[in-house]
Image (tube, rainbow, N blue to C red; front, side, top):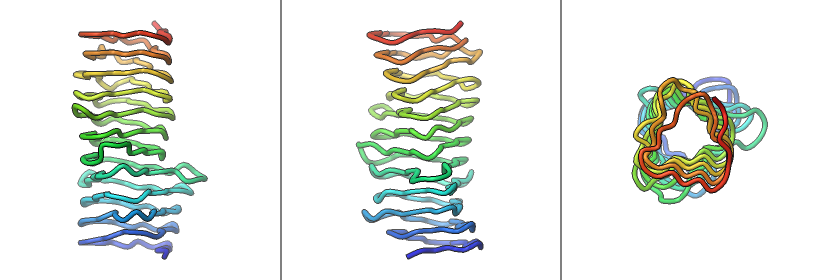
Length: 239
């Protein structure tokens, strides 16, 4: 079925969403515990979903379209425990705005976010791959654990502040990633295979291991490779 309208619905305790659509110019506010489960898809058309509590997403694709917004507030936790997609379906690009904690804690496969992701909080990749293809911005923390992968797979991403860090793999494969005010530090493995990585920060970017098999490494800033650099293809440019 479809939950629609111009008004707001506030869920204080439990919300279990297994299938269906939310639409309209209204708002759904989640203050308690939300479960996104079952293999069925969930659709958000135009509407704003605001999470102030804890969302646990275990199964089912999520499709946003017609400018829909999913806001994870400063008190919100969005816990990804599977390998499904959070997709832009069509029309005006929807947004996933994270001011709280967005984390992938289960599922060794890939979770793709093709909506725009704007992060002012913390994004943690604890397992598997989080693939960002819709572009966006970050002034918060982007962190990847050992054995996990944060992949910039498409779109235009700008890191204006905050930190990009982690003992796992951070990869640029098809995206344009611009680092301006953010600090890139304690990165174990950075890979560039396709797209552009522009390092424009005044603080040098520090990585342990860098692999470039394509794409363009550019910018006005410095990158410091502490251990191994494997360059098989691609371009380096900038001042």
